[in-house]
Amino acid sequence: MEKVKSLIKIKPNTYKDGEVVKVSFMVMHPMETGMRKDKKTGDIVPAEYINNVKFDYNGAVITTMNVWESLSANPVFTIYMKINGAGKLTVTFTDSKGAVNETSSKIKPKG
Amino acid sequence: MKRRDFFKKLGTVVAISAVAPMMSFGADEKKAKGPNELSYEKALEAITNGKGAKPSAKVHLKVPEIAENGAVVPVSVEVDSPMTEQDYVKTIHIFATKNNNSRCLAVHFTPANGKAMLATRVKLGSTQDIAAIVEMSDGTFLSASQSVKVTIGGCG
Amino acid sequence: MKKGTTIALSLTLLASLSFSGEQFAMSDADRAMYAEMLENNPADIMVAHGEELLSDLGGETKLAKYLGVSETELPKYIAGFPRYIEKFGMVVGLGQMLQGMMHDSKKKVLPLANSDMNDLLAYTKSIANDELINIDVNANQHMKDAYALGKITFDTKRGGRGLSCLSCHSPDVIGTILRTQPLPDLRVNNTGATWPAYRMTKSNLTTLQGRMQGCMQNALLAVIPLGSPDMVALEVYVTDKAKGQAIAIPGLKR
Image 1 (tube, rainbow over the protein chains, first blue to last red):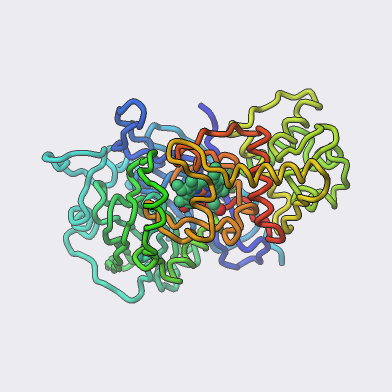
Image 2 (image 1 turned 135 degrees about the vertical axis):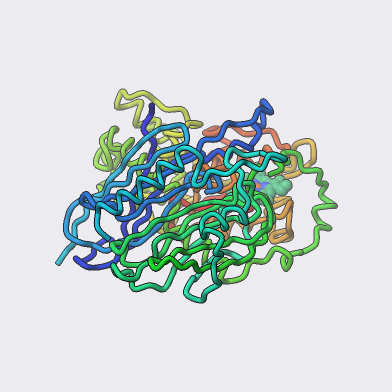
């Protein structure tokens, strides 16, 4: 299975330990509702959507999400997180067809 | 919250949703359309155990009054909370109250978030209310809702 | 959503479309919310993918060398596309320039209508983010000719409905509502500096040439092929309208 393209963005670009930063997770996914008809064939396009997202920061689960098909295609999830030491933020996500993917971003507080 | 408890909580959430997303309901037989059809009323009842949620000024729901495009409608929710172990926001649920499956997203927070906020984008088939239901760590439920006028539906 | 590929619309009807701006007007708060979405444009992922694709080709260093400029000059140089390039002997957009680079470095040449190519093109243009569009349509005879051809192509009525680009993008009709969409002013919209853009109605990244093909399809004009002299000329003409405005890639469009 082809790797699903995704991206983690942290704002601001530089941050200190203890700071609360904005984390956006973006992923390329069709988020098919299972109710849409293919314009050419007229067939119902089967449902296929991200259903779970988990944010792991240095081994601790800080946020989880249940996701349904009503989110826009190529969804974006923005939350906040408190910087608590250098390390890694990993986002693991699954979709309704069983695909499991993960992406991560280094956490490097300055000062 | 202790890590172990958290995993327990997470385990239940994920396990249940794997079987029948979120709650096990007899699907609305009459007009079962999408794979997860569930009305807002039923979802609200299930989440709050029939208690309902109280509209609160602590819940800041932001949606556009008029959506340019029903396929991509920005939604953000921020809840006033100290986000400490004693007092934090457990979950923010977002509903598109008239979509076939009204549930859009449920975000389960921990004090490690530092701030209870989420932003995302939803598809709206028609003009309707967006609702945010918030579960606090003390078990109470707060809510906010706002209508969005959709000029072109997003479910085509 | 209704597809509506055919627009049953005559020029007279178009002229009579009321300025129903009020009806669809968004509040400033709404506008601010949509503007905020730019911060997390789904196409950022595509642009990041384009960066990987360029680094497979040798990255910015190789690109600058290929174009015969220093790496510090590269952003300004990119902000001047489409350009006449000596070794091609013609005016080219970024996509064709990248094809040339692939060819000359003996890599597989991607077609212009290709999602990897779109990603790569978008990343390449984003190297010039914040630079001002500095296309010079008087730089040489080739550019002058391309501009003139672009203007003719833009202004000439064609197709089953006798429409030209100008029919919908002239100052007389700008702001008029067509199928709920206000007809955009390509100058005010900063069009030349905001494509490739993510199209929310299509959930994909589209180039300026691709977007213009969309208009041709909708208005029943014969579709001009990507990279053809007429298409590049149109890009020259439309990009010139954004001259002096800041490049912001990827754009985010309805």
